[in-house]
Length: 119
Image (cartoon, rainbow, N blue to C red):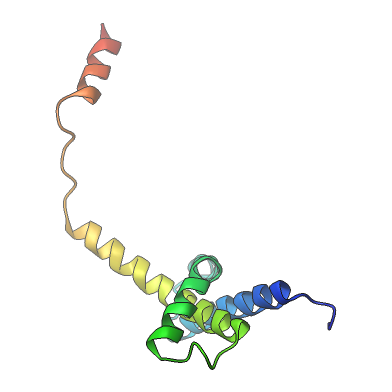
């Protein structure tokens, strides 16, 4: 295990944080079905891996821990928080868009395309 590069440790920390955050999100709001659990877990892991770096850096900056934490610790923290918050953020976005009716398409290109096709 000592042969692992610095980048390898960063990816391992980010993956561990993403999995941990996803598991915690499943524990605090239990899903109704296995399919829901699998989807929530997958979304959490992906969001943790994608947004974990930026989240960790921002949290370390806000908490004034940037000089005290190593890169792997920062990635672990960021991936866990991003993963934990992913499902809540998606839920808020869904509520926002479901509360607002979808406006009809303006007359223009779409109508022109259908009219030309019908000729």
